[in-house]
Image (tube, rainbow, N blue to C red):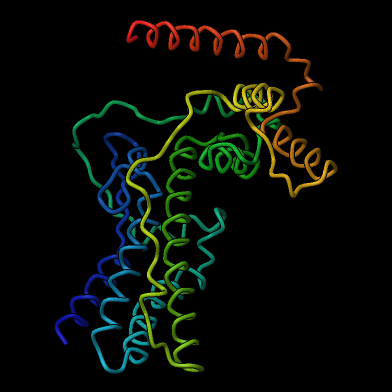
Length: 283
């Protein structure tokens, strides 16, 4: 019983979000954290932890379906409000007003916004939808904010983006609970561990290049044969895959970015020469 109550308390805590408007810095805080400091991937991590802990409780009790239903009831209280008020639409931002508290005389902090109004007011029609999610959302709302005409619109859109990402994680948990409930109802789940989410790796390999530079680098290695598609793919499929990869980043030939392609290859050659030189010293 203690495990069940502790878990339900965690669900309530996650769903009990707060929004604060800091008048001193003219920006918002979501769950006591400034919106410019929030990494929305944290919500996915938190939800995966809750999913894993849910599995622990289900394994430990005799009637897991009743427990799953109780969790659903608790978390859907927040989801019902979100859907009823259509909070996912920026046009309904004012419906957040009743839950926003204001604070004054806070310490002035250094601006950390990745994007400024000046940047967003420039023609950004060519920005790829696969670019930074926040940037894409800010651009998406240029028309509805009349190109960020009103003071404070940028901060409101950034807050709205955070709220949407937060609720995406909540709906992820709801879908997970509904799946478990349905499977338990129809078949009975003998091994809940098979539904435990795979933990995210602690370390990620990143690449310190722009998208177009990535495309050039991939293309160079592809032409050497170091990068290749598996032998099961026929020539037509290989060409289609290659075309899609290049298109994902940018249309290299169309924009004739010969200088950019040469530069990335020259830089690679220099780096490889340096690596070779260090290796030869170790002989």
